[in-house]
Image 1 (tube, rainbow, N blue to C red):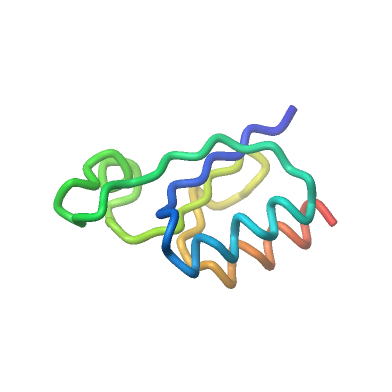
Image 2 (cartoon, rainbow, N blue to C red):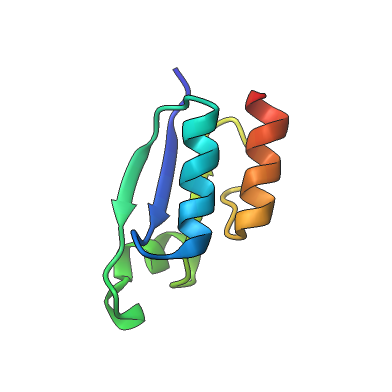
Length: 81
C-alpha cells in the first residue's frame, strides 16, 4: 500500500483543493494539520525547510516532496488516475 502524507490547514483553500483531489481519487493518506502560526510549524519546517502548506509526501514520487497545490493535483492525476 502506498504511503501518502499531507501537511495542511483545514481552512486553507490550497489544502482544500488537494484534499478534494485525494478524495476524488479515493486515496488513503495520513494528514497532519499544522498550527495557524508559521513559527509553530516546526514539524513541516524540519522536513521541508519551509512552513507553507499544503505539502505532500508520497513514497512513489521521485521528488522528496511537493509543496504547490497545482503541482500536487497534477502529480496525483498522473500517478493515480
